[in-house]
Image (cartoon, rainbow, N blue to C red; front, top):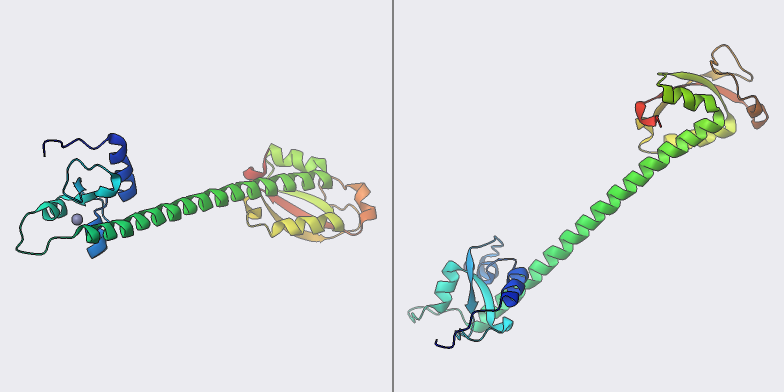
Length: 213
Ligand SMILES: [Zn+2]
């Protein structure tokens, strides 16, 4: 006992991290994965052997139990505790891997959503600009609905965009009837160049504030 040296801080830290402050006997016997108030046990009962393989984080009860000199009942053996310790360390490591992988998946999903969301908005604004630049001006001015004519080719792109999950955050579209040339429902005038692109269809666009610049 005279040559007991305190366990180096770096070793203690390694041990706390590997065990995540779970008691390996509680875990090995009862699958009890709760964080415990505990102490570091010297498994060979030699307090100067601070080799990390000789150390285990044990709850107070199990530490008492392990160090007890009572021979009334069979004490835990060193091999038994080391085996439980190995099981615990694997579980802690798996748990961390799983947790990190979940976190990284969540971040990826969130990033993906942000990208998709940005894409839908910018694609939609680009498309509306191509249909007629005045549409975007009206969107940014906060108009609640905008009547316009859309050529069949641009309508195809617009309808593709409507299948994006976030499309409704930006725009609703209602058909107001097919027209070949500008009609009374067309508030902003036809994009006359669109005529060569095929049939022009009348739509009422109902933008949300999210679509604004
Ligand atoms: Zn315990």
